[in-house]
Picture (cartoon, rainbow, N blue to C red):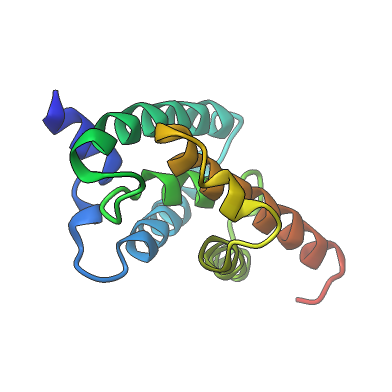
Length: 149
């Protein structure tokens, strides 16, 4: 069972990258989204919900082994990127901007994100990135509406 938890939480091993595993997981999702642009559909929220549930479950189980919010757990970054780019047109400029916004909110942790991280178990692991994704998504929508680019 531990192998399943680890495979999910590390996103098939991306979490074992020595430096920047969270960034690597976010880039991996952006790449997959771009490559599968034709499949960008109403199924995104269903897949996102599954990833959040799997993340809470696996991160909670691994907390007993690795401690709370270990750097190897990167499924939360995938969930945050998915929220950031949810129903956003699949264009390089939007993906890149969304990536930068998400990483900003995920690293700086303003506006209650740091507090969300303190929730117990897998909830805290996932909550801060979900909230960072929501903020990044809203800001990306505002940027898109302003026709800055």
